[in-house]
Structures are given as structure tokens and as C-alpha cells.
Length: 228
Image (cartoon, rainbow, N blue to C red; front, side, top):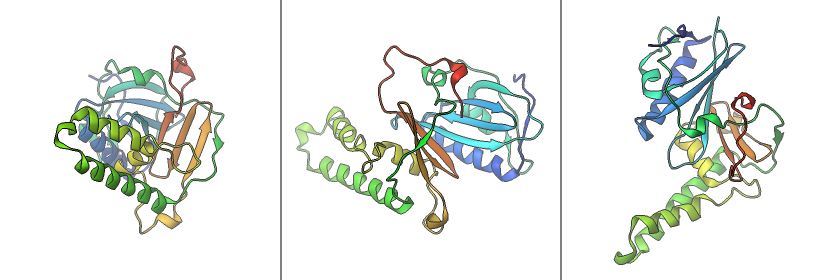
């Protein structure tokens, strides 16, 4: 049982947007966990969809919310959202996976130039998907194994988007999670890429995708130094 009071969103539409985000995470991983951080009425929800190797971040505004930091089941949080009422019950804390202790830094973010618009990013993802399918179909039967397909996938999705340094897998994650704007409004929606130390962060009005560009190694940043 949760020890936190129910969350009250500043706008009921934010409750619906969070529910959509959690639904996508649970679609990829029914046992997904999310880390919730609330500071000054701003809620940040961190998740890690499998295979993309990125952190996905959805924010929302709360009213009358005390600060807290807790990791919970994504599915249970989704079940506790009342979209029409604009509120959510916070489930009990769970022991989170290792990624929950290593979040993007609080500050030091600098803009990175060269990010294509949403149409350009969708085109890059579509081209990568088409290439994967073509190379997979061209494999002889004896090489059509999971390991070979994984190798092809890693090669394709680790490529960077132009000169930005942003791996294509991060753009694919943003599209799959609904963070890229629809084509009908794409031209009017601001998209931005930022860097802070080894981290990159693709930010859109619908959510963010963050990842480290170098392995963690033995250096793990303190949890207290992390921030949405």
C-alpha cells in the first residue's frame, strides 16, 4: 500500500498523457518499473523500455504536492490513474532495477546543433527499419539466427543522426513512445537536443529520451545528484 497521498494533476489532460506513456512502457515490458521524482510541483516519470537502451522521461504538473522520490510498478501506477478526475494513486515502492539509480544530471545542459525536424527523424527511422528488413530477408537460412539479427540491429541502430551524435535507437524510441509530434503539427512543434557531460537528451513537448554516450564503467553518479 502506498504511503504517498494521491497525485492531483494541474490539468486532467496531463493525467491522460501520463497514462498513455505508461501504457506504452507496459506494452514493451509488463513488469516495467518507473521512478517518480517530484520537486516543487513538477513530476518527472522515468522509464526504460527494453531493447532501446535509453531512458524515457514524461513530466507533469501537480497541485499541492510535497516532494518525493520513489520507484514503483508502471502497471500499478497506470491502474491507479483516474483520467477524468485528473488524479492518480501512487502504489507501494518496489526495488528498482539498476538504471533507476543513474539518472540524467541536474544541469549543465548545452544545445547541440544539427537536429533534423520531426519529419526528418521519422524518415531516418523508416529507412533504418527498411534496411533491417531487407538485410534480414537476404540472410541465407543457415545464418537466420537470433544472434545474427541482433548483430544487424545493433549495427543499424547504433548509427548516429547526422553529426549530432544521437544514436538512431534514441530516435526510434522517441517515435515508438509517442514523443515525436504528428505530421499534421510537426512544423510548429519545437524539438531540441542537449548534451551534458556524457549524456544526450532529445526533448519534445511530449516527452524526452536521454542516454549516455559512453559506458558507465565503475563510476556511478550519486542518486541525489540526478534530476529530471
